[in-house]
Image (cartoon, rainbow, N blue to C red; front, side, top):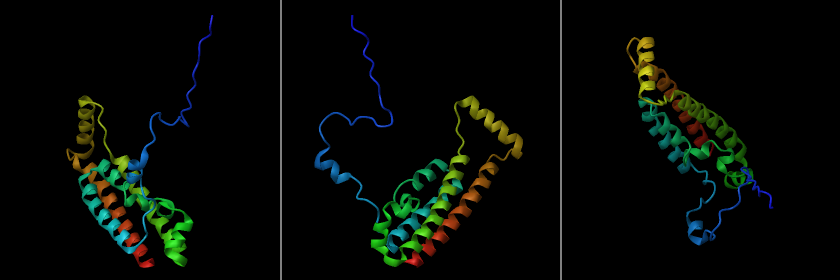
Length: 174
C-alpha cells in the first residue's frame, strides 16, 4: 500500500490566498503610506486626543484603545510617524531629528495610556463572574463601584494632559 500523506503548514509564513489577484480596485483602497507631518496633521491629532478625554472619564477603555490604534493617532506611536527616517528628513529637513525625539516622548506617553486602558478593562466571563466582581467592589470600596474606575480615569486624564502638552511642543518644532 501507499503510506499516509502528511501535509505541513507553515503558520509563520502562510501561502498566499488562491484566486485572482486583487487588481486595480484593491490598490485604490490600499493605504497611501505615512502621513505628511505638518501642523495641520498634528492639529487633527490634537482634536482626536481631546475626544479621548470623555472616553477616559466614562471608563470606555476598549474604545479608547481602538482610537489610539487608528489613524491619525496611530502614526504618533510609530517610529518616524510610520515612514522611514529618509522620508521624515525629506519632509522636515534639519528639524527631523528634534521632531523625532519629541515624537518618541509622545509615543511613550500614548503607550502608557494604552497600557492603563488595557489594565483598567473589566472583562466578565458570565453573569456569575459579574456578580462576584460586583460583590468584591462593594466590599472594598464601601458600595461605591465608580471609585474603582475614578482612579484609572484620573490617571488617564493626567496622561492625556501630558500627551497634549507634548503634542503642542511638537507643533512648535515645525
